[in-house]
Structure formats: structure tokens, C-alpha cells
Image (cartoon, rainbow, N blue to C red):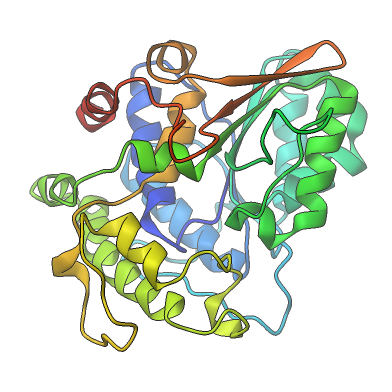
Length: 332
């Protein structure tokens, strides 16, 4: 079951592209996709259209919650010709999760959380017994405070956590209490395996509408992010981007060298040397063979259950061989 804030940046939709490939290889079996983060109905439209065009019309899509974002905050959803309302979208994503969990054998389901953890927290609060009996593990794109600190894992200030930090703290605390393993992929892992923009150029040559849209939106998204990090940390237009994400961070993250003045107002796309695709890496973590082959973990044992963390610092990215990993998922 995938929880996604698709439409905020392209790595969520790129994860769905990867998911379609892994499904064709019978490595993963998606049983539901929940679109969360306001405006969640528009995100669901995008998810439904994207999945329909990639051969996954039978995988149900549901509308999740606002993801902890206040009603006064208007978040962006990028456009796509295939993003249109559909009667096939479940109006209650939470009810869809319950139905999906009730349909599967015990201890068989992975939750992939590449968005706010608000909806996962709701499932755990409302149907704890169902959650405990059916969920095998929870894979999170986010981050935790160093596993070496304290007796339990605690979520850090990563964007997905920060959308609803109370929900994130609840999910981690409860999973550790009831013995559901968590696998957390941090931003450091993505930094350890950056994607060259040329891969998106190559994808777009297929003329598939999703590939072309991902390539087009990537440029827009990077420019929008640049405009957000230039703002003061207290400016609501930053949309809960962590304070550490400033101009210097942007240059280190997306450019091989050099630094831009915060007054730079032109497009920065031509200066970008690397893209960090967080969510596709989190999806690969859900496949045991890829998990073992490409990722190194820090372990945290709580109540006899081992929880895994990939990427704990700039030096410890948790990526065994970035070229081999890049070759793996670019081939998919």
C-alpha cells in the first residue's frame, strides 16, 4: 500500500513508473495507492491518470487526508493532461486501506510511506488490531534522529515528518511498541545516489506522456524550489520546507560546484548537475533482493524487533555502490 503526495515533485510519479516495472516483474504487488496532502483530490486525479497510462488501472486509488497541512495553506500540484477526475477514485482513502488490509493474509503487507504519515497514524489509531495483524513492515521516506541516540527511534525534521510531526512521532512510537519493523530511508541516501538530469531526457524520448510530463515538470519543480529556498524561513510560501534548506543547501544539493546569489531570478535548470530522487529509492527498499544488494543499514533493536535506517549522515549515506544502484533502477 503506497501513501504518496504525488504532484508536489516528480519523484513520487517516478516511483509509480518504477512500481509499474516492478509489478511486471512480479517483484511487488500494489493493492492500493492513497493520495495525501492538500489538495488531496487533485493528487488522486494525477495518481489515477498516471497509473492508468502505465498499465495499472486495476490498482485502486483513494483520497487521503490533508496530510496535516492547515486549511490556510495552498500547496501546489503540477499539471498533466492525464490528470482528470475519475469515478474510479475511492472518496475515502482510509476505507480503501481497511478493505485492502482485510483482503490479504496475516503479516503480508508492506506500507510504503513517501508522504506525510498522517494517514498511517489514523489507520493505527482507528484499527490497531487490523494494522498489527496484517502489516509486515513500514517503509518510510523521511528520517530519524541518529539511531545511536536514545532507546527508541525518533523522527527528525524531514519534510514528510514535518508535515504532521505529531503523526510521525506516533507512527514511530507505536510501531516500536507493537513490534512492527520500520525501514527508514533518509535524505542522505538520496544524496548518495543522485540522478543526472539526462536520465529524464532519455525517458522522454520514449514519447510516453508520463515520461514527457515528468521531464517537463522537473524543470518547473527545480525552479519553484529555488524560489522557495530564497525566502525567509518564516515565510509561509516555503510550504514547510525545513529551515536547513536554504540557498547554500540548494547549491550543494543540485550543483556540482559554485554558488548562486539569492537574487538570481532566472531559471536555474541549466545549472543543475544532479537530481535527488528520494522516493524511487524508498520503493526499491521494499524489494528484499534490492535491499540486500544495494543498501547498508544502521540497526536499532527495540522490544526484540530490528528497525533499519539507511543514511545517517553525509558520510554514511547507506548506499553500497551508487553506480550499480543507479544502473539498476535506470534499467527498470
